[in-house]
Length: 46
Image 1: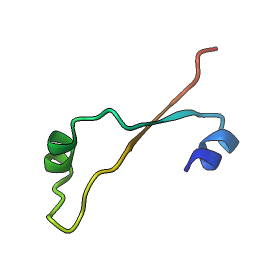
Image 2 (image 1 turned 90 degrees about the vertical axis):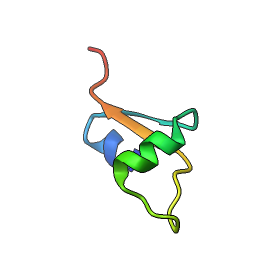
Image 3 (image 1 turned 180 degrees about the horizontal axis):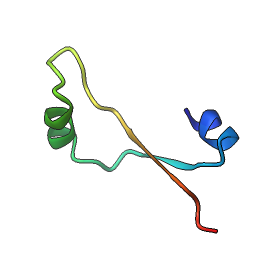
């Protein structure tokens, strides 16, 4: 995903500091899945 973002001119950063229970609930994840990290993607400042 990181390399794709670079090629497309997008900025990205991987974050480990996230609200795992809230994100898991919002994504509808079951017990067999768990969130380890999240990745923010956006347009870099000009």
